[in-house]
Length: 134
Image 1 (spheres, rainbow, N blue to C red):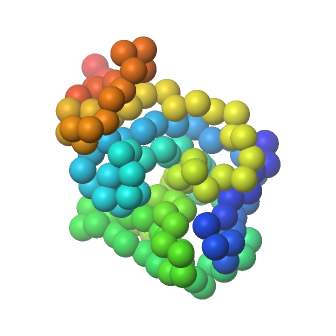
Image 2 (image 1 turned 90 degrees about the vertical axis):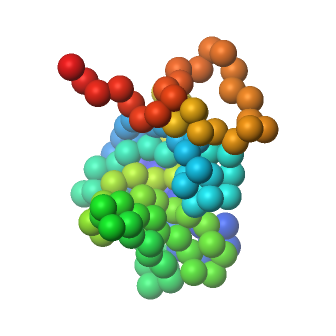
């Protein structure tokens, strides 16, 4: 599958030659601030399937001490992707131009979601991150 995405002002764009995986929505307070929303909408991508096609020089980076980070447009502020140790590992679903043929499979950190947000009873949700596999 071939997908494209871009920031709000159109200065930065990317292409994905592959399939997105593991779509999720995170409701933690850090994601609410990073995405200026009630939650993030995010899916994983293989780094070798992702490519910046325009405006890569306009990217601004934030990286935590643990190595996780975000890249966003320095002009319009759109959060475009997530990184780990500087390598793209996932994208924000809201910046895609096409239907990614994927649905959000679960919601994490709903124990710290905004008090004004209501989630349907039918969605898969976890109070914190994903449960550890046994």
